[in-house]
Image (cartoon, rainbow, N blue to C red; front, side, top):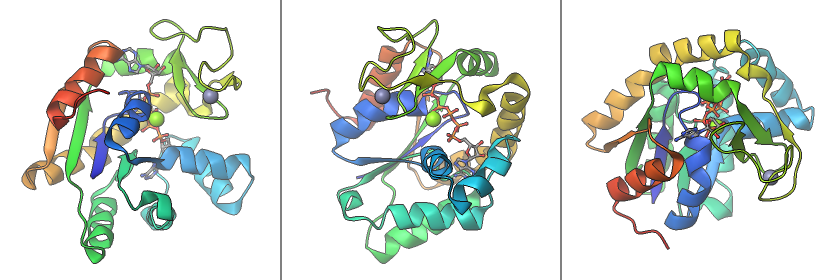
Length: 217
Ligand code: AP5
Ligand code: MG
Ligand code: ZN
């Protein structure tokens, strides 16, 4: 099964991804995480991505498409992928469809987590992320058990540089102008599932499971 998680910055894609990948038996591929990993290793790709991410702009399609298509060529992705943060433009969506078609595969469903703009800004300003496993936390809605430490792996928590208010506003603008057309793209293909993301984390998880018609373990 290949599923796309769609949603504005802060909608809860990363938050929902871990449990959902386990449930579906697929691999989590998050383009933002791939860029941040490249940056932590100081690669050319990482430094190039940073110059866009810091401004809240999209990394150019060519670079992004190549990176993600290379990742899904790895053997662990054969059973299926949960895409998070990709595709984000129509060109990326088409490139992904073309690639999957070569292998006789396709995107099965696209889940769009819809959240009000006001809530998005609040969520991002209080977010902390694990440096090692990327699990997101929130100072108010989902604090870690031990302050500054990841519940899952004990890693150090940090705040993303692009979560400052000015950059968040730019990221939201970019989402509505460049990524929202993807929602129509999947809707036209009859693959779109809408989920109300303005609820608690567990309620959103349940709504996604119900839309995808999968049971929790
Ligand atoms: P990326 O890393 O993909 O970030 P994003 O899309 O902006 O989304 P976020 O990761 O910020 O939000 P999320 O939906 O994962 O929310 P989370 O679960 O953490 O991209 C970053 C940058 O990389 C882009 O700006 C771009 O430059 C570049 N890039 C990446 N992919 C690209 C592509 N395909 N093409 C071009 N450029 C690309 O949750 C947020 C917070 O809310 C957390 O604190 C969480 O605890 C809390 N929370 C979650 N759910 C709830 C809930 N239901 N109730 C209350 N709080 C909640
Ligand atoms: Mg994320
Ligand atoms: Zn961790």
